[in-house]
Length: 74
Image (cartoon, rainbow, N blue to C red; front, side):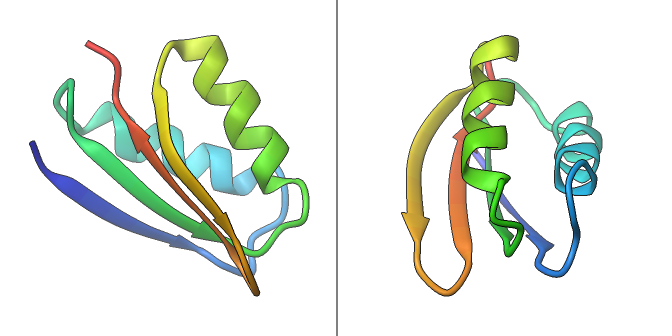
């Protein structure tokens, strides 16, 4: 299992999800994507997007930025 990091700080909705989709397309099932974003809507967006596509959110940390770790579905 690999973990890939993606910096989406400074991007506004929907661009973080566009970059996440592109990264996920290149990943193997079970791999993790650690995404950092600054858009206030990102937390809700990543939860809804992950649920829609069956990916598991392993963690979400909200601080100055929002960092989410998402595991790609099988």
